[in-house]
Length: 242
Image (cartoon, rainbow, N blue to C red):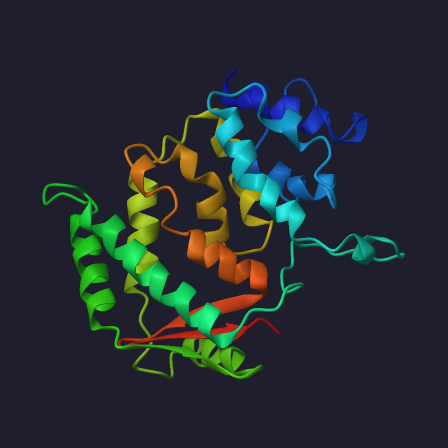
């Protein structure tokens, strides 16, 4: 099934009101919020991936996002618009351990990039930043938001974007944008408005990186517990989402 055919198949799952006109082109934006259609249990989501190669792998990736939802949140007039974690407690030691594991797994991922690869320069810079990290810090509630605000305004010289940028460059270079699964890119992003959650859930599409398929699992676990990350030049901060 080609990308347009797959997009039409997906939209048809929402009923006639979502079906495009015969001559209209389906775009990824049309599927923003698509996975929310299956909240809270995920019933029916298995049909999403039936028409595409490796569909069972994509299905296995996405099932846990429904498992982290609290069904009681969907019994009132207003229901969540995103897949919000934070329904389980995690100790500071658990959170710090996940941060440390994420660093090591990302080092392994970027070490796979060969010298002549188009993503080699970005990967080297990311490895340098990861090697410079000296501490994983778990912040009190509310504090990570302050770091994120300073980052948005560019007021903290210690902030580092190298790892974010290198990961984006690497995964972009390993993506086939003509594949059917690409039509779901905005749907994946809209799960949490978080690129790294979207990267983790889409991992089967990244060619040549299958052996690193779990490198972002610690990040997904932190998200499931309700936490965000903030990178600086020598520290990784972990804080609860507000």
